[in-house]
Length: 318
Figure 1 (cartoon, rainbow, N blue to C red):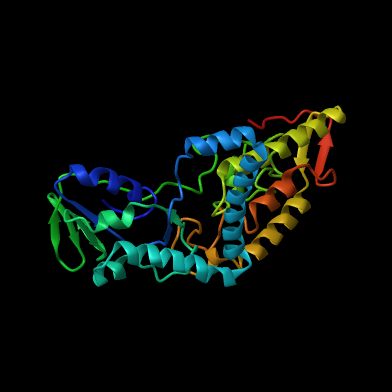
Figure 2: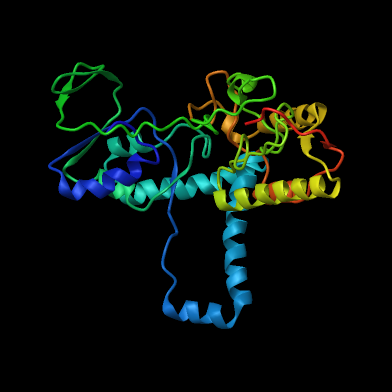
């Protein structure tokens, strides 16, 4: 198993009982938290059915916890030690071996890398048929993997839990503007969009869960719903104006991007760790540097001064 991110912490516990041995190659560890995922018992479901307000309060408590995490990672860094203490306790509770504890304990700030929810990762690492290697990989050989210290370990199967192109967004689609330039070319490797939804060079085009709409702690569904509200509001404005073309003003998009980059600079995600959030140049196209409720509030209705609505049909945006 190459990698110890979100894919690996799910795959390894699933296969461990069925394989003779599994060797895990780790570049750097990330903090985890308990999943807190459980089935509601029948009595709770009956209470929710009879008193819907209690169910809404339960849901609000979940959202509140996620928003607390967002506050810790963006502005209120004094909250981070409490989250880090929970994560450290999860390690200490499951792992007694000091060397293994050292290997899995991050040196990065809590939240700089993706925080991974799990209840099974650390207990699995203590199983007798599991070995965690933190020496860098030198090469894949014909019979296994050799690490930089010269040790070669045999392997029948290699599992690459090494992530995906999180900065691709609309890939593999190619969205072109009126001049035939693709969205990827316009972004020039630095994806960005007004509220993660609109690009001034691409009229009549909207993104859902676009650049800088990830929360780091919250629900993707919540974010997509908020973005959809913005799109519907824009289409309603277009219909009221009897228009055929809507696009965000360039200066509005530029102003928002400057505001967003300034806010990102003081978040935990920009504290220097290696993560898929940030590219090699330090550009973060993934995360929203405020709370999820702030995103919903800002996207709920369009600002009519932010968009230009015209009657000419946009040509060539495909």
